[in-house]
Length: 311
Image 1 (cartoon, rainbow, N blue to C red):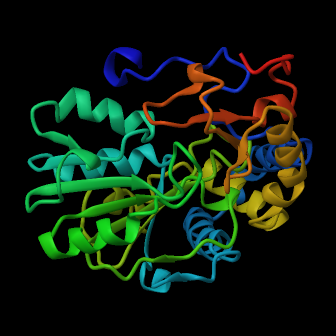
Image 2: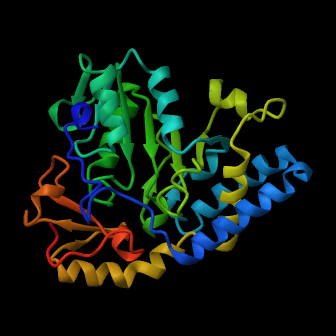
C-alpha cells in the first residue's frame, strides 16, 4: 500500500487505520445469522434476499439523516462487494478523465491515482475543477470524519463543468444529523457499505445508488435473471440492520469517544470512531494533511491494547 499511496502502514499501531468495532452484540447477531443462512440455504429465495437487502439498506442508512436533500431520487440500487466494488466500476467508466481527490482520501482511491491516473491527476487544492475531470470524495471525509467545508462549492463547480462525481458514504452511520444536498446533477453515484459499522469487513456488504441506470457489470449481475451476488453477505447484512438501529454504534460509543479524546488531548470527530489531533502531537497518524486521525475501535473491542501514550 505504501508504495502506491505514500500513506504510512498503521495496522500495527493502536490508533491506526479505520476499522469497525467488534461490538459483542453485533458479533453475536452476525454469527447467528450466518449459521441460519447455512442451515436454511436450500429453502431461501435468492431474489427476495437481494430485494430485501436493497430496500432495507436504503431505508435504514438514512433513517438518522433526514436532512440529506434529494436522496429519495437515488432509487436505482445494486448490491456491491463493499464500496471498493463500486469504485472499480467508477474508475473503469471514467478512465479517460483526469482524476481529482481530496488529500487524505481513502487509501484505495489513492492507489488508483498512482496505478492508473499518475499522468492525469491533480489534488483538489492544486487546481480548479475543469471539464474533463472526475471526482471521488468521501462524505464524511475519510481523514476527519467531518463534512468538507468546501463541499457545496466543489459540487457546484462540478455541475458547471459537467464533472461526474461519486460520493463515498462509508462513514454515514458513524455520524448523525449532518446536512447535505445531493440534488447536484454532477452526482452520478452514492455508495456505502456496512464494513465500518458492523464486524463484517470480510463479508463485503455494500450498496450503490443512482438516479438513472447506467448498465455496467454491477447492474447486470444484480438483475433478477442473474442475481449473481454475495447472498450470504446480503442475508447477514439485512439481519444486522433489522436488529440494530442506524445510530446504534454512535449512541453506544459516543461517551467512550469523548473520554478518549479528553485523555489524549484530541478534538472529537463527528465520526464516533475518531479523535482528531490538531496540535501535531501524534504525527505518525498523519494522512498528509495538517491534522492527524486516531481510530479507537480496536481499543474498545480489545483487539489492540491501549497504550500509555498514543504512539
